[in-house]
Image (cartoon, rainbow, N blue to C red; front, side):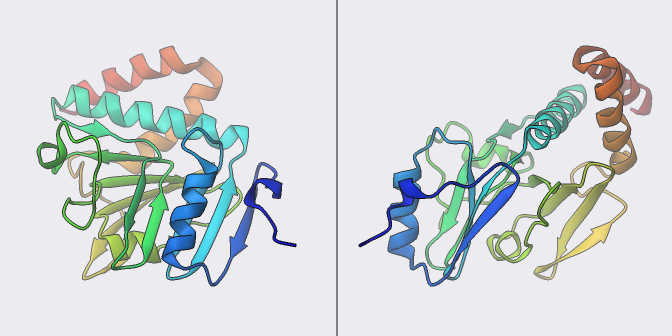
Length: 212
């Protein structure tokens, strides 16, 4: 008897690891899972991870994404937010779905494109991962060449920048070098849980204007 993917249940906050998954199987699994789903996938050279996030994971993802959008708007920088879009490169045998991602410096290169192919197009300039129950694996982000990766563990925002193909933890953001972004994002995420989303966004925008 063959096990069908639809028979598997991954509870929120848990992950399922499948090994020896070739590229054709990976593509078929993505097709079977569909685009309207709660789970996210990560694939690297035969190892496939399927993860279903917790509710608080989604809360943090949304508020951090909103803060980044507000920041880019206040700085008057064009950007494109692609959320949990699936990025993949068959030649590198890598695929991932970030919690959120942004094209900033390379926004013009993918402006208006309905499908992005990392065989030809640049990767996102910034990816965001919420690590409440699992720790993000760096290897596929490094392989795909994402310049900056943020990880938020519920208490702190960690900034990682790509240097010579490997991530190093940094105090300064590659995309926002003029701002103490790690401390600010962490503080305003915490504020949102007390003051509410709208009050927090207003306070954050005011803070950004004061910095610039």
